[in-house]
Amino acid sequence: MAKSRKQKAKTKAATKKVVKLKSRPAAKVKAKANGLPRASSKPYGQDGKALQGVRILDFTHVQSGPTCTQLLAWFGADVIKVERPGTGDITRGQLVDVKGADSLYFTMLNHNKRSITIDSKHPQGKRVLDALIKSCDVLVENFAPGALDRMGLTWDHIHKINPRMIVASIKGFGPGPYEDCKVYENVAQCTGGSASTTGFRDGIPLVTGAQIGDSGTGLHLALGIVTALYQRTRTGRGQKVSVAMQDSVLNLCRVKLRDQQRLKAGPLTEYSQYGEGIPFGDATPRAGNDSGGGQPGRILACKGAPDDPNAYIYFITQAPVWEAICDVIGEPTWKTDPEYATPKARLSKLNRIFERIEQWTMTKTKFEAMDILNKFDIPCGPILSMKELAEDQSLRKTGTVVQVDHPTRGAYLSVGNPIKLSDSISEVKRSPLLGEHTDEILKNVLGFKAKEIADIKGSGALSAPEKKEKAA
Ligand code: CAO
View 1 (cartoon, rainbow, N blue to C red):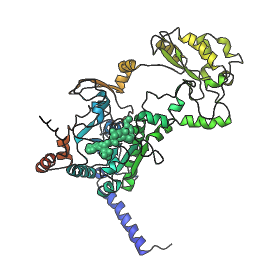
View 2: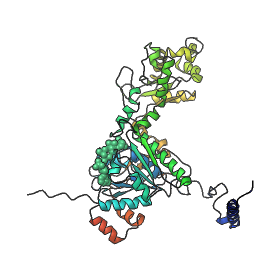
View 3: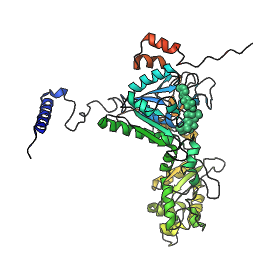
View 4: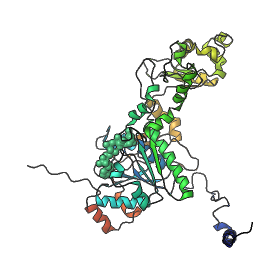
C-alpha cells in the first residue's frame, strides 16, 4: 500500500530518532532498545531504594493508612505525614506507656516518615497543601467518607493542579448501603466474613489478633499505589486507588467463600463437625482450629499445657507423611489398617486421631515436638508467644524484629519490613515527632522563602490554637 506524505514524514522522523540514538557515544546511551535502563553495575543494595524519587503526601491516621505509607517509606519513598496541629495522629496519645512520649501504637506504624503540621481547613494551610499536592506523586488518606472533600481536596481540585497525582483512599465500605459509615478494625473483620468463620462452632463469632482489617487493607492499598505508579509511567496521568476494608477482609477470607459454595455439593468433610456427625447449615460454619485446606490439622497440647497458655503446637496430618506420623506416635498398624490408611477413611475419625497424636505431643515440649516432627517433614509449628517472638534471634537477624531508638521514649522493639528486596534494603528509622519537619518541608521541598514561611506561621495555619486563659 502506498504511503501518504504524512506517513512518509512520520517514518523519516522515526528513522532520524533511531539514528540519533545510535550515533550518541555509548556511555551516554542510558536506554536499551526495549526502553528499560541498562542493568546497574553497582553492587546489589547500593543503587538506591525501590521507590526512591516517589513523594507521598500522607494524610493517614490510626492504623490502616499508616501501615500502607510506612511500607512505601521502607521502600524508599519520601513520605510527608500531614498532621493536625497540636494533637497530630490520634494514636500518638493512645495506649501511652511512657508519659510524655509518643505511644508505641504511633511509633510502630510511622517509621521513616517526615511530619508537618497543617490545619487543612485554614486558608494558609490550604495554600501549603496545594503546594504539597503539586510536588507529590501520591496522596494517601483514610479519613471518614467525605472528609477529604470537606477540606476542599476533591479529585477535581487535586487533578487540576497535579494531573499526575495518584489519590489513594481507604474507607470501611465500598459504594453501597454502608458507604458513609466510619469503620475500625473489628467492624471490618465482622463485615468481611472473618468473624463468622472464626471461633468454635458452638461459640460466638470471634475476631482475630491479626489486624487483617487495618493492616491487611493497608497492604492492599500499597499494592494499588505501586501498580498505579507503574501505569503512570505509560499514561503520564494519575488515578484514584480505592480499597474498602470489608473487601480486603473478604479477599483474605476467600477460602471461606469457596467453602460456602462447596456446601451445595455436600458436607465439608475436612471440618471436625463432619466427623462428629453434626449436620451443616446453609452458611460456612466456624471450624475451630481445623486446617483450612485438604490437610487436616489441629492445635494440640504439649508438655506444660494448660498452665503455660502457649504450650501448644499446630500439627498437620499431611497425607504423604502419614506413615511417618504413625511411627512417631507409636501407632504403626494405622499405616495399613483400612480404617486409617487413606485420607478419605481418616476424615470421619479426625477427633480420635488427633486425641492420639496429642497423647504423644503432651510428652514433649512444643520445641522438642517440632524438632522430632521436622526430621520427618511433618508440617507443624509451635504456638509462639509475643515474648518468644520478641526474643527470637533469627527474626532479629533478618530485620523482621528491630530495636529502634527514640529521643523521648528510648529504645523499643518494632516489626521491620517483612518484605525483603535484595536490591532495596530497608532501614527502619524512628517515627517523627509531631511537626518535626515542618520548617524543612516548607523550605526545602516547597521552596518557600523565609518571609513566606513567617507569614504562614504567623497566620496560625501550622500551630494549635492557643488555649484561652480561664477567666479569674
Ligand atoms: N486539619 C484540620 N482538620 C483535620 C485535619 C487537619 N490536619 N486532619 C483531620 N481533620 C479533620 C477532618 O477533616 C474531619 O473533619 P470533618 O468531619 O469536619 O470533615 C475530622 O478531622 C475527623 O476526621 P475523621 O472523621 O476521619 O476522624 P474520626 O476520628 O472521627 O474517625 C475513623 C476515625 C478511622 C473511624 C475514620 O477516619 C474512618 O472511618 N476512616 C476510614 C476507615 C479507616 O481507615 N478505618 C481504619 C481506622 S484504624 O482502626
